[in-house]
Image 1 (cartoon, helix red, strand yellow):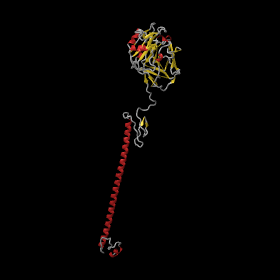
Image 2 (cartoon, rainbow, N blue to C red; image 1 turned 60 degrees about the horizontal axis):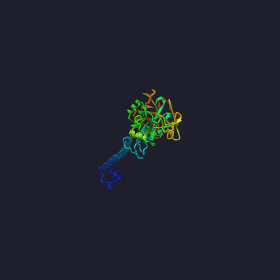
Image 3 (tube, one colour; image 1 turned 135 degrees about the vertical axis):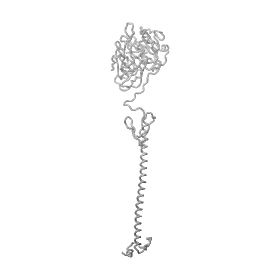
Image 4 (cartoon, rainbow, N blue to C red; image 1 turned 90 degrees about the vertical axis):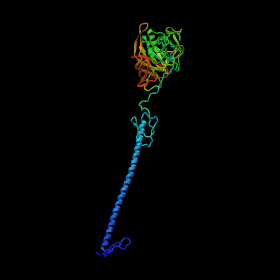
Length: 425
């Protein structure tokens, strides 16, 4: 092919203004033209590939960095919120933290906390305090109010009826004495709603059991009339303000309408002045308050010592009215003797070395220790356990591990030798 023919077939003519040069009609010129075009195309392809690779790498790196930063920030924020909420919940559940309630926001990402094995819903306050129990805690109970106390030993046989002032006693202990009989130790308190009566009686002789029964009452006055040398020695050695009739008749009188020895009557104001005692700091252990759960039917209770039988029956007067040896026990002031709470306390009994005039040994109740107990109040009964670690310790009364609360009013304690039946109806 001739150069002229080639020129006539080329799309871009040498004279075209887009051409940077005017080749000659020689082969060398055409070859140069072709070479330059090929070189330019190769450069263009190389530059395009380089730019594409560079842009792709740049965009990929930028997107990767952006996504990585975003994901890192999101994960950091989530982990921080979770750890903060968990630490807050943990610190809140610790017993040494503040008792203020901690409220979790409904939108919080904190993990749920747990109480007693159950999760606490988010958004509700976490309650603090001791763990829930299957049974509610017992209510707070009141002890006997502190006041000036006067203990009086009163006869409990038919010759003493009617007795004076006994219906106003705060606590009455019925204790066994010689011959299968019983005698009463009555506690009068200036802090009781009914106060202390003006006169009490008939007053009889003391027993060793009186010292053990009064050992946890504190320094109280004890009025009595008579007693063996051994008994007087035991009483004098106790932490009591003894004011016996035999030492001085001050505060006593003999009633003309009664036969001896059932005629010694005490003037309580004169007896307390003679004793010089004030408010007691002791604690016999009785606790008063609402009745607890678990009580069974208990409209009456009865028990019998060898020569004395007592029956106490719940009445409309909200008292257990007392019959002794089948007869209503009527106070000299008119009403029948009654108790708001009756305690049948079974106790060990031992015989003292003391002997009465006919040589019969004196029984002594052992009230330090523990044993079974039957408590009646409000027409219901509870059977449980009494416990007194030492003579000066309070006596506790409990059923199923809960303290037995006494009703407001007089408490009669029947000290029953272990094995003697206490029948509840």
